[in-house]
Each structure stands twice: as structure tokens, then as C-alpha cells.
Length: 292
Length: 292
Image (cartoon, rainbow over all chains, first blue to last red; front, side, top):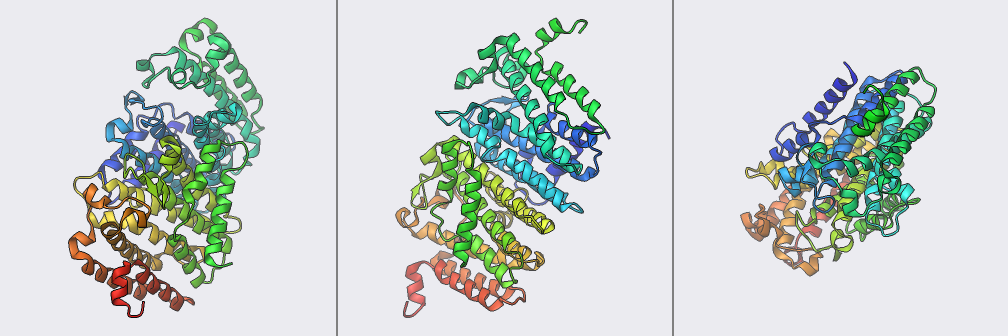
């Protein structure tokens, strides 16, 4: 099975477990709705790529970790879209969960997906309970308070924002979870893999700023101009489009340089390089990559 | 340390970990606000009583489990109070979290407390990772979909409600978590402890119906008449006050009969008996217990 198929299978198994037996039908349906269509599934793809680069010694744990991470990401999208945050009408080209199912079920869908993420990891503990506990610790640290994506969102309610802490928590956290969980699922230490995740996260933050500034809502499948609207800091406002693209490429070069020694090092570097192109807006991509 | 002090200490440690370092101040403060004042801390008290009755062989795990369970309960109160659910202005005699901190921070407070619950258990894994993983599994099962408190809340969005599944998920789930996690933290099997939790949960459901029907908001510290208002089933509507009290006492007698053989069996039975009186509304309590 390739990476994409493994991720889809692991997510489908987790969702199916959450829908089993006598259960409220609308909430059960909303769980599936919130994780489909999947988009790039970039975080679990990075997680699995790192695990494979490290030998993927416990595929069951790797699969569970990948699913758990994506469930957390989808939960954060559902809650971020709520009327009290972005009040987004659309997500991935279809009505946001609260528009499709109502606000109560959107809150519960996010809650249920968060819980499902930890349950999925605990269920995969099997012969490796210590590794499963480490994976749960990392995922929780990168998701909650004081430095996970909840903290990142929490910074948006502060008058005095620690910008570095904000960005690391808001966008960086789940990429650090991706690289570290991939390593830990394969039996490696988490620490050497933090920088790769942090740098990929920074690059995605800049890419997101570019998309928010440049694209229209229909292309993106979600509302644009949200940073301006909510007074959030944005790399394009600060550096201009070309400047932001340059910064993104610099960051990804640093990411590649930070990859720890492992069997799959070269393949991982190629993956990050490919991401740099994917993340560059098409117009600038064409101008900078002859022949594309 | 007595049970109450152990629970308070474990919760304080978990909250402090969630507030450490550079972190959004309002969200950090809301985490503490949401778990204080504590009320009876009845769920973690049951958990710890069961663990002690079973020998409390891993006190660190017991403490973590008690804190985790109470964090989940508090998270559920924060989210249940949101405008899209009960829209409660008060809770435990003070403004609800969304009234005190605003809706975005209330959503994030609930999310963060859920995550903190699992992190607390993972952090306590230490020498017992397999037991920690089991505790995480039980807590997740009793909290999320398809049969945890999220499912319970989810049933309220259905036209066609499975009443037994609804009550077990809505109120019973965290009591079943309490008895089962207490047993597992002490190294015992979870299964024989399910019935005790289920029955205590049923008794609390009836007691809650009585309070909702009989008390005023000031005594209760939260809005009353919510069941009537939201068209939810209520034992008092169905059986009358005296009938509901009789049912509650029958259920608790069944709870006592279900306690598995263990060293602390008699003390546990006394605890459940005491709960029966605490749960009975004062007027009826006085009429039925001479001298009180």
C-alpha cells in the first residue's frame, strides 16, 4: 500500500469505530463529513514519510499515529470554522460542518474527533504501550495548552501577542507532531526531529499567507482575506509577494539541512523540495522554474 | 492525604502544566476558572474510592486518572453551557466560561481540557504504560463517539432518540469511566466494575431530574427548568417526585449489590448509601429520615 492508501485506510477505520452500534446518526455522519474530502493529507504524509525513512518498525503504530494526527487537524478546522471564530461558510469546496449540520453538532464533531485521535493511538498500543504513550504525549503537547494549536488559536484573543509563540503553536505545532510522531512510531527519539517539523511549519505559514493574500475563495474552497479581516499578522503584508516566496524557499532549505541521519534521508529531502514548488503560487512558480 | 486533597492536588498539577511558559494569558486563566470551584468532584471521588478498595497499587496512575476524569467532566460543562447548547449564564454560582471569557475562549477551554486529560494519563505512564494505555482507552470510550458523553449530547440533535443509549451516554458514561478506571489504575479488570458505574449514573440522572424540576437557580448555581425548556425526557414528569425518589433508591440498592468482591467492599457500599441521602432533595430527605 502506498502512503496515501495507508492513511486513508487508517482514517476510515477510526471513523468506522466511532460510528459503530446504536449512535446518534447525524453526529456519526458529521464525523465522516469533517474528514472528507481529504485535501493533501500533508501532515500524516510527512509523519509516514519520516517513519518510513526511519525503518517503520511498528507499522500499526505508524498508521494509528498518522490517522490520529489528521483527525486532530480536521477537528481544528471544524472548530476554527465556527461562527465565533472564522465563521467560514465553506471548507474544502463544500459547506463547513456547522453550515451543513448546525453549530451544536459542529462543536461535538470537533470534540469527538479529538477524543478519537487519542483513542486510536491507545487502541494501537498492543505490544508497544510505552511507544503509544509517548505518541499520545507528543500529540497532546502539540494540540493543547500551553504550546499546541489550541494555544495558537488562544493567542488570537490576546492584545499583546508573542508572535513567535503564536506562529509555532498555530501552524508549527502539528508539523512538529508529524516529524516527531513519525520518528517515535519507528522507535527513534523525538528530539532530533523537532527542527524539521518546525521549519516545514514555518514554510506552510508563509504559503498560507500567500494563498490568503492572492487567491480567490472559489479556487481555495474557503473564505480568503481572513488575515486582513481579523487583523492577523501576514508575511505578504510584511515582505511583499516575492519577498514572502524567497523566505519560504530559505526556510525549506533549512528544513532539508536539518534532517537527521537516517536510511531514507535523501527521499525525505526530495519530498521537502517538492513541497517548495507545490507551495509556491502558480504564477510565481512558472516564472521561476523554466519549462514548468 | 485524603481523597479530596489527592484529587485537588492532581488537578492543580495538570492545570499548572497547561499554563507553563509563554502562553496566551486569558486561555491559561480560563483553564483554572473552568475547574474551580470544584463542586463535589463526585466522579474522581468514586474513581479513587474504587482504586483504594482494590488496593491502589499505582497511586500515581490513580491520581492521574482522577484528574483526567474531572478535566473531561469540566470540559463537558464548558461546552454544554455554550450559547448553541444550553446558553447557560451561570455555572457553580459564577458566570459560565463563555460569559466570563467569551465564546472563542470557551470553545478552546473545553478543547484544551479534553486534551489535557489524555496528556495527564500519558505523562503518568512511567513504569505502567500498558495500564496507562488501558485507562486512556476507557476514558476515550466513555467520552467520545459512539457511546461517550459526546454521543449523549449528540442524541439531543436527533428526532428519533434511543432513550436507553441516550441516558447511558449522557450521564452514565463518566460514572462507568469512574468505576472502571479506578479498578484498572489498581491493576484490576475493568469489566466487573461496569455495572456499578452504570447504576450510579442512572441514580444521578434521576437526581438531576429532581433538581431540575424542584430547585431554583440560585440554590443550584445554574439555570433550572432546562429539561422542560429543551423538551428533554425527565423522570419527575414521568413518575412524580415521590416516584422518582423511590426509583433512585432502588437503583442505588442495585448498585450496592453489584459491587465486585474486593478488600474495600463494605466501605464502598457505605459510600453509595451516603450518596442516596445526598442526592435526595432536602424536603423529602427530612420526611423519610427521622431525626435529620
